[in-house]
Image 1 (cartoon, rainbow, N blue to C red):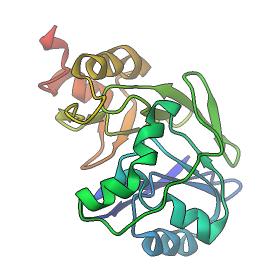
Image 2: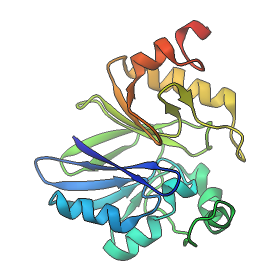
Image 3: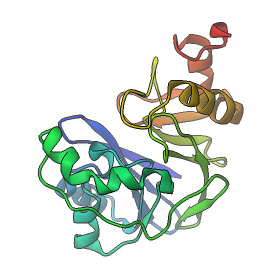
Image 4: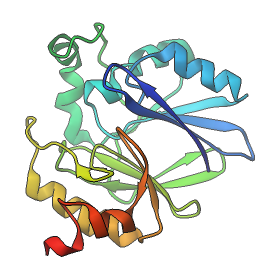
Length: 213
């Protein structure tokens, strides 16, 4: 599994291009905006866009989804249906955060814990990791030892839980019970900021390190 991180929107959200080296088929994870930039990267790398994958439906992660579908016609997979209310509220989110007006959309496939999604010949496992939002999912490639974690976990921090239906205890549980057991060597792409590994966060993250008990 190859990847290219494309920071988009004023929030510098890590929109990520994942692709299968063998087939050159790709998925865009969390197209929050700046769709022209995303499409230019796909063309530059000579890839065929196959689908959109969403970790959750906050504006900086999902705001460009409808536009990308309009331009490419690809299907949307994710997030979990628990984020339906966030998708429905995208126009209000765009006003609240000063984003360009966006359209709502309906995913072609809602995702559940234990589902799998494909990108070309590669397979990603789906983990339902609520807490930041109720419908947040994480995409994990066992073969590549790589996870796309959205806003669940960051280098040295964790996702906010002060938005509607956010829950701190649930978020901590998602990280400790679902992500950390995948293994210390797993690298992860967060929704914002630099990459890290689960092992590094277990040792040093002030919110979820092992020393926190």
